[in-house]
Length: 119
Image 1 (tube, rainbow, N blue to C red):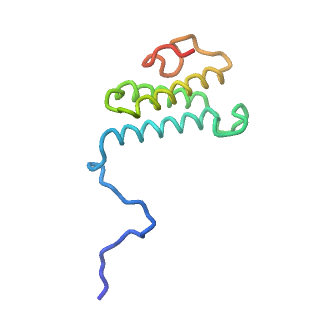
Image 2: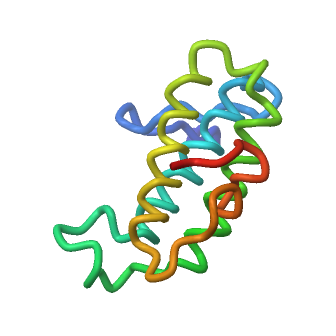
Image 3: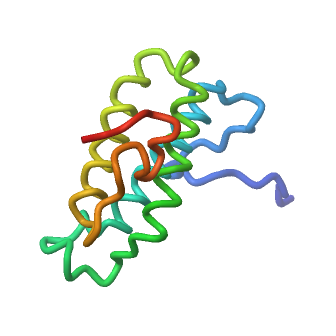
């Protein structure tokens, strides 16, 4: 008799139901995804960001602004994750400013309406 119960292979990660994942983990994962995607769009994953085929400052601006909103709005819930996420966000904001041919005025860069000016 064949058992029709499907089992995951031993080497696959455990699948968790969304309701079982703590909110801080969901928020942190979303922030890390935004952070990673923005770094890619800034070309930071390549040796020469200026010639990166993935570089797209318009997309980077949107991602950085979304990350700033998320980190700012959820900072009180992030606990020990808040500091590193804020640091990563600020690094992206500075990298964006450096990458821009005509940098935004202080306070007008991506996400700065949520974080304040980044120099």
